[in-house]
Image 1 (cartoon, helix red, strand yellow):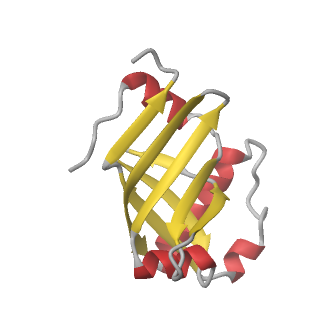
Image 2 (cartoon, rainbow, N blue to C red):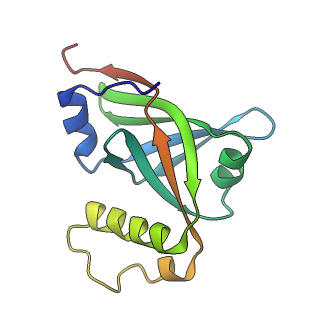
Image 3 (cartoon, rainbow, N blue to C red):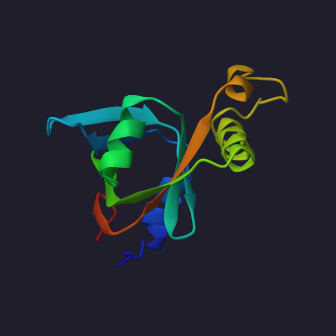
Length: 135
C-alpha cells in the first residue's frame, strides 16, 4: 500500500539531490549505491547499467530502501523495485536523468549510455520516514 508524500517532502524530492539506494546482498549484508533518481507520481524512477551488484540483488529480492538527505533534513523511502529492461524506455529514462542532474546537457553527452544495456527501476513508495519538515 503506497504512502502519500506531503507537499513539502514532495518538493524536497523534486529537487535534483542524490539518493543512496540500499539493496540486500546474497549473504544478507547491505549494499548501498549513490544514484540519480526522479520522483514520478507515486513511485521513484532510477536507472542503472545491467550486471551491477544492485541489479542482481534486486532480481533476487526487490525490496529496497533509499535515502535522500540535506543535513538533518532527510527522506527515507522503503518499497519494492520493479525492473523495466525495455531498451527504448531505459535509454529515454537515463537521458531524462542526465538532463535533470546536468542543466547544460547536450545531445551526445554521456555516449557510454548508448553502448550499455540499461535498466529502469520503478520503486513503490510503501513507507516514508521524513525528518526536518515540520511534521
